[in-house]
Length: 288
View (tube, one colour):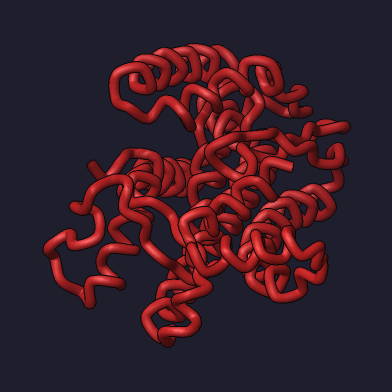
């Protein structure tokens, strides 16, 4: 439901689309094929990215011989959804397998979301006047939610200049974008949230595999307090604070024990974790 609300809201500032919808409603014309064609690319970019995320989890679980539950959608107001929650039904062999399972989903999801963003931005640059009339849009304030995503949008649409032409505009100014770009941007935010190392999130599983249970509990506690304080004072509360609230009730439990929690996962996986967490930080820190 919230995903459709998000998608439809991206057309809220488009006078041409809203006028056609109003006229169709007044004339009892319920053939909205034209509007469905407008929202389909946005639905596809969000759905494909999340499908690849969950498929990567399933692939690792099948490869390493343990089972997982079907994913459950965690709702959000500012985004299409916060994440998809899944739990392990049987124990992985060791912490290395747990790390592979945890990191595969957000890594693939983040990579596909960035790809959709870049493709969508290129399509935005090449849109003609008629296509721009029917394009969805997001406010500059939404693009400023993400330093990484916002600066990618700014760089591409500004023709490679370093002036911050897009992000320095009034936060309420709407920027028309191809639906794939909006879907890619939102997908980056969703996958970055999933990488936050709290309890039973994918980032939490990575932390558990790297630090062990006592270390993970301490680390995730510090992360929770930092994010809570950040959301109160940095003007990013609608996403981060909402995520912490939902996470407290849905993903507060640690993952089931692995059969071997003694052997370390190695420096290679620590480097992968550092790369993914750095990407998540750049994605979630506001551009301004």
